[in-house]
Amino acid sequence: GQQLNQSPQSMFIQEGEDVSMNCTSSSIFNTWLWYKQDPGEGPVLLIALYKAGELTSNGRLTAQFGITRKDSFLNISASIPSDVGIYFCAGQPQYNNNDMRFGAGTRLTVKP
Amino acid sequence: EAGVAQSPRYKIIEKRQSVAFWCNPISGHATLYWYQQILGQGPKLLIQFQNNGVVDDSQLPKDRFSAERLKGVDSTLKIQPAKLEDSAVYLCASSLGGNNEQFFGPGTRLTVL
Image (tube, rainbow over all chains, first blue to last red; front, side, top):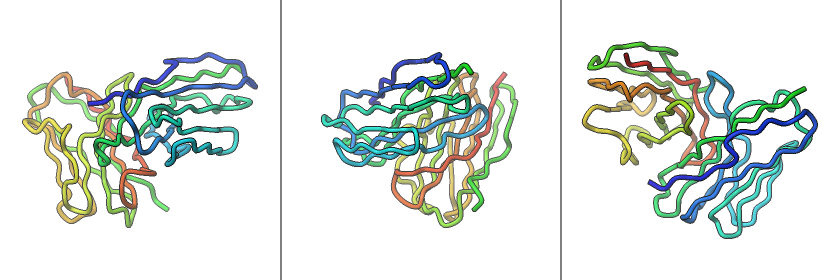
């Protein structure tokens, strides 16, 4: 099935820095979502995007649905230690609206 | 509001044994999903239920995996017989409807020896 290419795989940043990660696909997606997963827990939804070009914020998090509908990015501003975790992009492909594909994740480490 | 409940949290079995996982979705959520998350990867959708009917099971290895949601609430996922490569976290999620805004349970970590 269609995979989502998520990058970078991991990031090591200093507290206070901004972070950017992205997700791309060769197919068109109808929905893009960003999740955060802490160790031993299930993913938690951060932001959901439903329209091409849509830019949505949730506190220090901002995500955008790419105009081509084949990509999305997530930015975190002024990172804090509790931002540590694995961030996943996910989306519903246009060719199967019942499906939900996940990227491989970006592991974020924030040094105090 | 109670979240998605899963049990057991951990399970260790030997290959060729059988295992079952249980999920109780958020009350009122019609749609229930089972995902497999292998270490270092994102979750992979195995099966989706709408009430007690299967919406999509195209990625479920049906020779050994089965799932049911008989009364449209709780669900069980079974593996019979298990293989080494089935070692993973099995996540259950639910949503009010459709595929958006899924709420995940804590998962069951399966180790097959």
